[in-house]
Image (tube, rainbow, N blue to C red; front, side, top):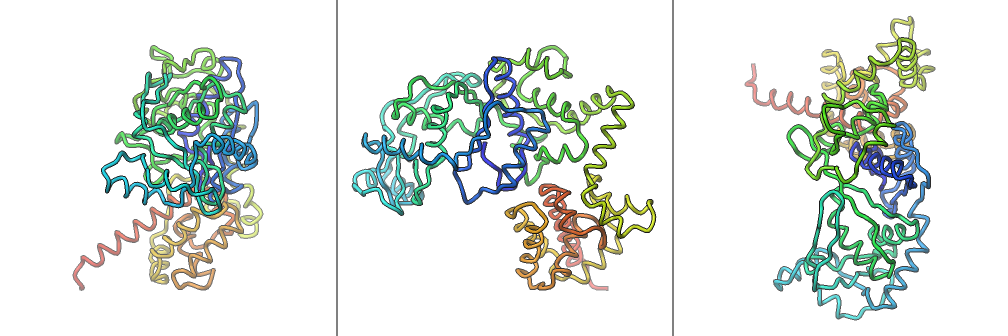
Length: 461
């Protein structure tokens, strides 16, 4: 899987990893973890570490890896050399948009580009390498989940296998790695279906033998039957972990998204799931990620714990959430009863904001909305650790004309904690987690915009 630029582990990725894990365990195979980090501009160490932490929490132990594609460039270059020697690649200094515009103007299929194919450019820095897709015939495969899938080759573009900066693209890297690692089954989301004919064409062009088996899993959708989106849905596995969901409950629930053991059974142990899971029984229709059903299932797991186990699990969860900032709370609290009010923002699903503090900060910060927007943009890209969060906050303030860090912090602190004072902000944001912090900034921004719209619509007294 590819590291997410936002750093969190999507529940869809977790479901995909889980189905791979179940199938490998059931077949007595090897579950391989490969980090597809060929896009070096989007790579961050914390994003990769987040994948490993989330999978470990869920109980998905891997047998091989993690392998990093960024460390395997020599293999990809060798494959590119073989394709070049066969005349199956050509150099191109055009953008994808330019190719598409030429085809549209000439009334040609979207994939064909005779102009680039016939120019005879030599491979060199600044030129991408494209695969000469055969524009006759079809490319087909028997998908375990979707049945027979077939693509007209004329509809497949001459796709790039190496960027103009010399970096191999993931489609080539995946083909080379699947062959090198002996991958027998590629089980992934249905958004990769359009990549599969390219995968097969490259596989055959490199003479790699029998194809791996492909299984493309259905999308996860929300109550409106729309694809889960980080902008409107809670999609980070870490959010559910931080809210106190049990890993065994999440494991159980994810296994039921697109597959069913039959009958009315919903609670199954890991051992039962390994025994009963059937990849060829996975449905191709979208799977509804129902938070209410997940919460009900989690409640069943909680009730099944012994009192001593429940106490231990609850205490461990509470301690893990706030112990890193405990020394800062200790410096500020006058009584033990004040401790919870300083750290409750870590536990509550929504911020509790004092109306007087909200009004005060809004009066003191005319650029409130702009600062939250700038902070959100910075937080989406920075490494999620206190020093980087501090720098992103300072840069957000400077971007909207707030040069003092203390002043830039105030709207952010209010948005994410509901208060104007408390433990150090950057350590608090780190503990809260990127996705929860971004969601709270968005909620505060929307509240401010509603207030501003209402104020503008009200006639003066």
